[in-house]
Length: 221
Image (cartoon, rainbow, N blue to C red):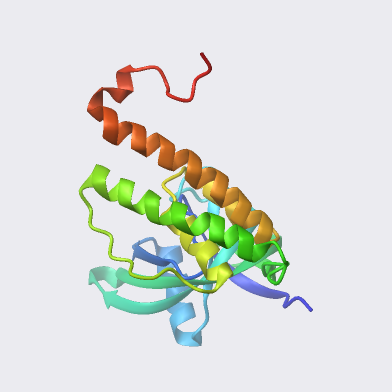
């Protein structure tokens, strides 16, 4: 049974996934109020991707699937501003929104991943896992960043969220992943995306900075 409830919403140009850390500088009065209330009531807020508008706009359009964020650390600053650390917890779907408070709020319901025990899941995980490792190695070679990941999550749902977090794709593509209802579909979509991105990054590593002037390696002959 879904858990329908009211949730304060924070529209951003970032897609938050369960398990993902998110660092925010809170300076607008409406969000200082919202975060203050969340801290006093020990409750989360919802992070949603903006579809139209900007983060500082008073009127924005948002996508209807987001992720709850729990505040784990707060650093108070001057004039009531603060830096906060949050972590994504669970997906939700927005049923309606209102502006009865200075900030946006929504009536939401839980949106858990379905088909977690589908027989296709182990095969999809086995296909995706080596690609994740290859992708991280290529990305590290390209950016001279050292990734230390001795072991990937054993839980397929956690693996799916980790893959979504590390994928270097535009927010809209990440939002499409977040909105996928079932685990098999999510894992399959991520396999296609990470395979595409790994090929693209491999081409950049092998060809150097001149790749921008070359025809796309994926263009038809």
